Image (cartoon, rainbow, N blue to C red; front, side, top):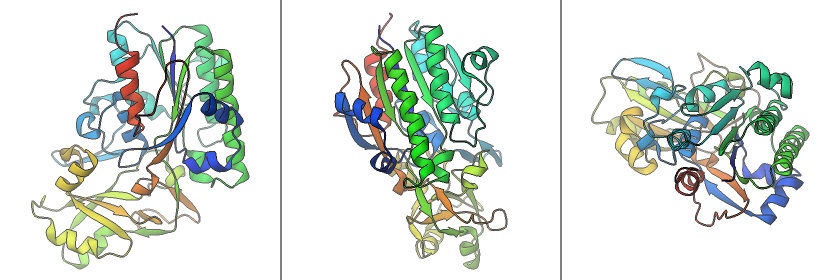
Length: 370
């Protein structure tokens, strides 16, 4: 059986590939295929990585944000543990079939979230000594070079051991920090492009599937919706969907937010009316509407889901100052992502979402014993 290598480039908005030179990726696209598809909402890392590795929607796998308010226990949690995933992952499927899988991530949060069932899992933040000996000490997580380390680590481990399935996933610090037309972005894309090219050169018989979890947009305004509701006599709590422990990236400011009404109101119409009249709010959806439209697990979202306009993020000014220059995601404006497929037998004409890559792996790669 040939190795299938899935590469998830965190935050790779299609605009980066349209502006920054990436000759090796262009070669792969021409020899294979290239299209743009849609990610899943909310357009954040955990939701989309888990959707891909399970080939399913959040209504099934349960990861509806990076951060979650458990109303039953009145406690907030980072959704960074495998205990929150309710669907089988491709790694668990592979393990059950006697196949070997490798996971290499930049962020250790994704190693903790995704690694159940993997044969080997590595993060740049907590790398084992034998990988450091082979690849070198990882650059810091807030650097352009750390994503190249992920690719090089994957290539090194593949040179030492055989795997049927490989999943390499990076961090989006570079995309949060630099627009596509800035020189740092060109350098970052060149690092990725060269690293992927070296993988293809070393493993020419492998199948390659390359995509992103979400895009990225410039943001210029911040809204604190509990203040708007309080002026109407409605008490509420806002839970950021983008929040994680990598706050240098985004200051926990994203283009979508969950609103939890005090008293757990079964009739949010008054709050919805207020929110829909806030300038900068593009849509305010009840829990039922949001779950139905975006295939979300109702018990793991707020009473209301609010979507911002293109330049809007949601946050509390008493907790965070709006950065001088902010690029972020989370809204519907960051759903477009690229897919590049290269290798024998790969056909992506029917792919409509980044989740489709996981469906392909589960349906066509993990189909029986080796």
